[in-house]
Length: 281
Image (cartoon, rainbow, N blue to C red; front, side, top):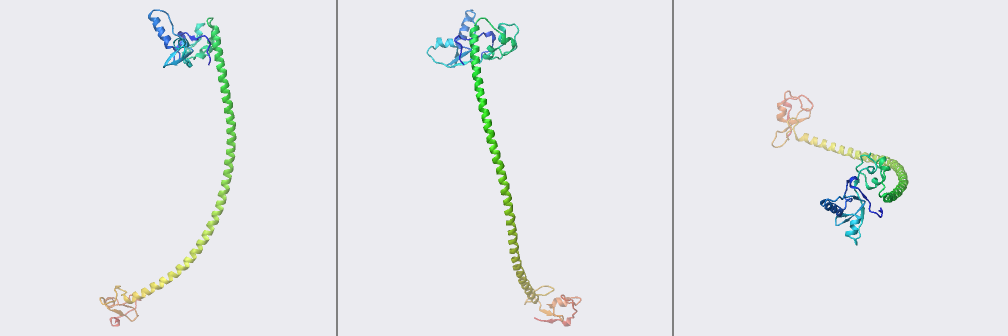
């Protein structure tokens, strides 16, 4: 923002907070000296100050103390009360007005109508600069809004395209799922058929093995019958009693058949007597 040629200040009675950029260090020192010598000097809030060696200076002090130094001025961040107190007795409770809000008088009706003969032209110039800055800010905001609207339109187009792509992808996915299920059913059918065939061959082989095992078990049982007693299941050998046969044709060891009461064959329950015991070996 440009500033008027004349240095603009605001009376300290209207300053509620000098902030970090509203007070000049050099003027503050001058104020202190004037108070020592009992002279009246009120420190005002400046529109612009510059930072030099971490200290703030107003335009006048910069031109006097640092005439050859190029500095960057920054607008004040001081806060002010209602400006209507200059020409009106009735003012509002505003205490946090910025520099621009103070000169525009945006806090109340009386502030918007305030005037003062001294420095009227300079205030008009200041207000014109504030207006120019407001127009620039509005133009910038308008361009940002237009750019944002254009981005929204472009985003909508991208969204529509993405939604169409998503819908097509979903349709394609459904078709591929349907085809996969069809192939899977056919594969399961063929696998079941092959399994049935394999199970049939396995069943035939199992039947043949089972018949062979039965024959083998029968032979083993017959051999066991020949070699063991049906009652005590002891083998007929040199250490055990001889095998003995009875009239029905079944055999057991002599001791077991002799001790049976009544004398009935343990296999077929046929009657026999001790006289019918015939030792085989």
